[in-house]
Image (cartoon, rainbow, N blue to C red; front, side, top):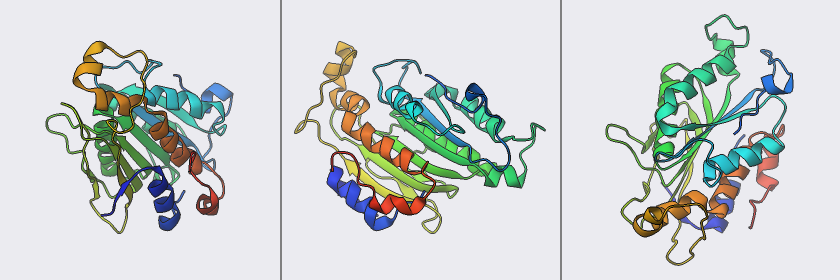
Amino acid sequence: MPHFTGFGSLALALLLLGAAPPAVVGAESRGVVPSKSSKSYIVVGFVGGFVRHTNPHHGPVLLAQKLQESAPADAHIEVFENRHRRSARKTIIRLLDADHDGLLSNEEKAAAHIMLFGQSWGASAVVMLARELDRLGIPVMLTVQVDSVAKPGENDGVIPENVAAAVNFYQIHGFVHGRPLIRAADESKTRILGNYRFDYKQTPVQCQGYSWLDRVFTPGHMQSECDPHIWSQVETLVRERMKPDPASLAASPLPGN
């Protein structure tokens, strides 16, 4: 599995690998009723720790707000607390159930366009949710983990085979730091876009609205949560998969590169 460091490497990796294709914004809120033929993008984020899903200082919440500004009319974007993974799964199933019969047909599952992202415990929740969707036969377009930290009994290092592409951002300093490596359960089905390390001792990020405990005991982990550069990369990865022409991915540079 390749290891990359820095933003230029991420852009290059995406070009070489040919990556394919609160606030809630959904088809219902825009007066659009999804049909079986529509491309309904479902984007689910998870915040870390004990953070509220509406906290405006945290990366997943800010990203959801940015995505909703120009999301397709058939997109649904929602952020959950990491402990509410079950609610997120139920929401996804409800959104995929186009004929509202309470069951997901093979057609409805195949039409899924799901992307998952999260930070800390929220990043681990991403992998756990993807694994639950795998057991239901529901595909996932993309998973993004930012400084992923697993709760006891969770495995956030192996990406299930229903995920088309996955990427991992991490830092290694402090009492709490992210998983440095993710791998695919089946490399023929899942493309690992990279494991990208960031060093906030060399390039610190100023964070607003965080407690002194965060600043003293988990400064690196805190900075991964508010780092605009990382979340800009995540935004690009999500937006590229909302484009109607996947071939345009190879010609689209990431912000700041």
